[in-house]
Length: 290
Ligand code: ZN
Image 1 (tube, rainbow, N blue to C red):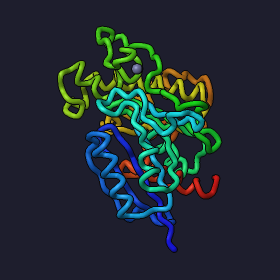
Image 2 (cartoon, protein in one colour; image 1 turned 60 degrees about the vertical axis):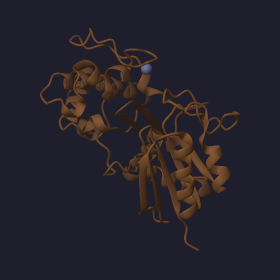
Image 3 (cartoon, helix red, strand yellow; image 1 turned 120 degrees about the vertical axis):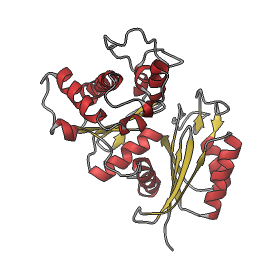
Image 4 (cartoon, rainbow, N blue to C red; image 1 turned 45 degrees about the vertical axis):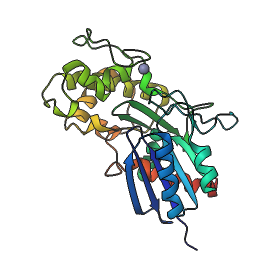
């Protein structure tokens, strides 16, 4: 009998479902908008009832409860997303589908996919989009004890040309997410991020903040590379601006394991596929105890 693996990318704006064969090749995929939990979870269940798989890797927006001994394991917890607070995502899927589910954050799933694609077992994945999230893998395992890391809400130094902007994080104001996620662009300029010209100084300011996150990850986790994904990174010159600020901040304090172009880089899995690939491998890991 053939083995199939499922992937659920549970995002705040859309759900992406995919099915892979035993060699992790995608054979089917669909996506739909994230609406109410009831409607969105029903659609997901229907899809996997019609397309049976052996196990599912589920990377979700959060915060989520990953503590296996917690009463609310498998829940989306204190999210600001309307209607989704305290939703038992894993429990509802397991009850309906009766298969093993590996539950983690969307960025952890992306980090895992990148690990499998690059062969690097020590890496950090940061996504810079509507929000900012980070996932880290050390020696093949996710970091985190009773929960998952929240790298998007770290404190960073403000850029001297950006001191009047108070930041858009509802919890902390000018944390990293508050000053460098997509919505901060519109909050400052009144223009949607993708419509701001590439030579606008705001991109240099954003790069300065993201470089600090890369610097903090380097100094605390000593990864082999840092991968930057998400919509904001689609701006053509962002990665080189971040590399430039990073090199300046690091000031030769430690030797990088490779060139900065390879150390701070865009995702290696094409077409935003890092999380999907990671989910397939996480589903597989449920059978292998990898
Ligand atoms: Zn924050």
